[in-house]
Length: 157
Image 1 (cartoon, rainbow, N blue to C red):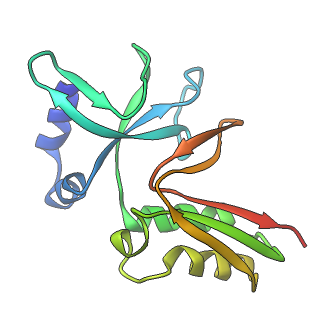
Image 2: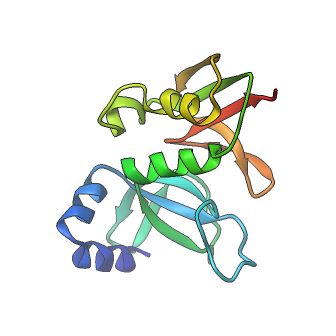
């Protein structure tokens, strides 16, 4: 995996390298039986380091030998698009927003990005929440601890 990572870094554009320098992550596929992987098919974990002596990657979770992984970067445009896609067409009387403290003004150019997105997409006047250092949310039919995410609970009308 380290060799592949080095290949990716070597072939990356300046823009891609800038994103990598702000935080490189490992997406661990949640369903190995799928043929094609899409948005939402990976549980994202931090890349903690590499051991050049043996080519191992240190990842912020247990990763089974032979598991399919994909390297990921944090990108404000994609994060915003994901949130809007997940909320698209939702309407609610209220909601709770648990947003990673690595988002907010650390990721987006404007403050209050996530709560504004929830308000704009759901038209709810009542949103509460907090910044977190890890958020619970669903993936592949189960709940998992996520990082750098926004978990939203909407109360139906």
